Image 1 (tube, rainbow, N blue to C red):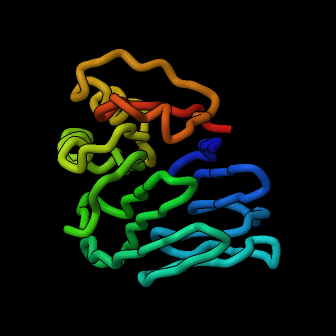
Image 2 (cartoon, one colour):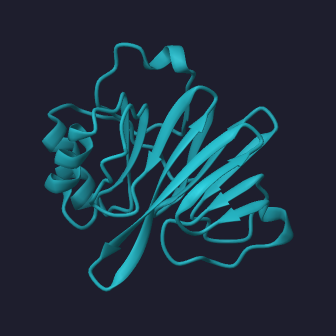
Amino acid sequence: MIISYQGLDAFKISQGDLAISVNPRAKVSADVTFFTGKKNETSEKSGFVIDGPGEYEIKDIFIKGFLLKEENTYKTTYLITFEGMKLCFLGSLEAPEEIEDVDILFVPVNADAAASYKLAVSLEPSVVIPMNYDKKALEQFVKEGGEKVEPIEKLVVKKKDLEGKEGEIVILREE
């Protein structure tokens, strides 16, 4: 599985010829496209578009979406099972009780870096990928983790690579 960062809260995840796009900023080509908040413009190449809660199964990708209210808006948190790994995209700084056994957690950082880190640790993922941050918030988030982290271009990962990892922070450079 290859995970690349498209900026803000946008990611592309690919495995073989399967592609998932999360919160794309422009029209993209993907098998499945998710939106945790307000839906952006899509095209016929966006594949199956998911912009709300529910349970879905598309091409061996299992998705469960949870609707959460954040101030005056609604956000969706997704738990995605893909290639034997559970990926969780938090739409807000809340996590439904059903979120467990997360391998890779995508957590929004900008609102409150300390609270973001605390929430991430409470979900006990193998890997934590921060999103939707500015430089100061990211520095605070990494400081909360107590380790020095160098940004990488993309994360290439298999289930076996996650064994023994506990809350490792991975920062992806924007493409």
